Length: 223
Length: 268
Image 1 (cartoon, helix red, strand yellow):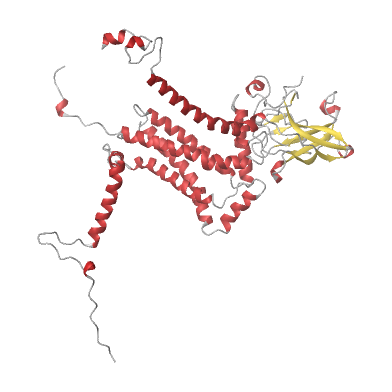
Image 2 (cartoon, chains in turn orange, blue):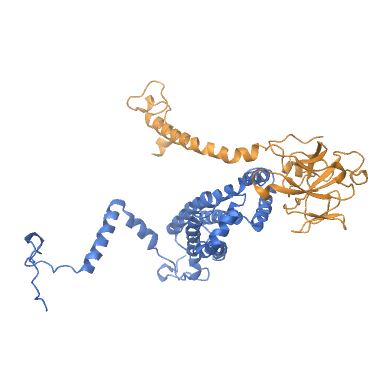
């Protein structure tokens, strides 16, 4: 047996004295049938597994819903030194849980620097530690999170606690004399804009922006 | 006036019991007949499935000396799972995974108004904690008794998968009552998932069914909680038990092997 194992069998079935072998045939009929049966089984399994996986993953990961713009008031109703809380819609058709609070104020060069990105600043209440809702305390000029003690200054920059980046913001536009609050965007500690907003807990400084890639559905970071 | 009692009419010949044959056994009593009927029913199944061999292999195993109450933690975990499965199936008869308020309302209804609803929901709610505690105790037993060592490493790995699946059940089940606590715990939990590098963001989008908590998040959690993970747990428990039956259990570490005098030898 040992010597039989040493000399490899010929790959041609004819050389192996298999009855009915054809000239140049390299695969036995038994092997062909085995592979066909396994292949058919694999194809049948894939035929129902791949569609349901795509069904479960496709829309959540690759599609982004249409932006929703919520009118929140006239431009005059927003001061530039403190925030006005406004309820905005993020998701339609789920009642209360589709809404969130945005803190809105007018652009202020003393706080926001010389170049306005938007004439109004709308800051998200979603804490950048793990997503609890922060509130703005005017006396301290701070956003404070009730869960694990995250603290942010008036620009939304982290001044204390576990959050990894400044508070998200919302795009703001003016339509029909109304300030409208739209989709969310994320910022890093330089307040650079990341249009594909990241979940809380995902750092966007240094290596963080590569560890936590944006969604496939949104364009790359604006420069 | 008292009527005279008439004799019963005679049975037709076909229904009359035949007289016992000489030398035959005495007629069976009803209890013995019932016993025999049971045995023959079991025999009928066994003749067609040969299950008795597998059952004997599974149930009549040799166990080492020193086996003690700690060895029941695995069975306890399994019965906790069975209790969760049973109560969960029946809770599903009243639950409605509707994020726009129907979910909370259905849980309120089944807890406050359905007969035994509070009890069955309580079994499921507290049973989940019991199951997690039992699974951890079982894991601790395996660790401290050294029962994870060769050749049982694969069973340890399956056990770790079962632990993760159990935690997944706890996480997805927590959202279903859909009150403030459920909602915010899920927001935080999904965000913790999202902090995993590279794949985390996609995992949290997959869990939520999108970039924001939306109308499909609750049905998604419900499907994972009641269909996907329980099936996986049941299959994994099967593999876990098969390996236990195949490899046997270990003796506790404080038990020294008894020296066999026959094996002693002065020769080197």
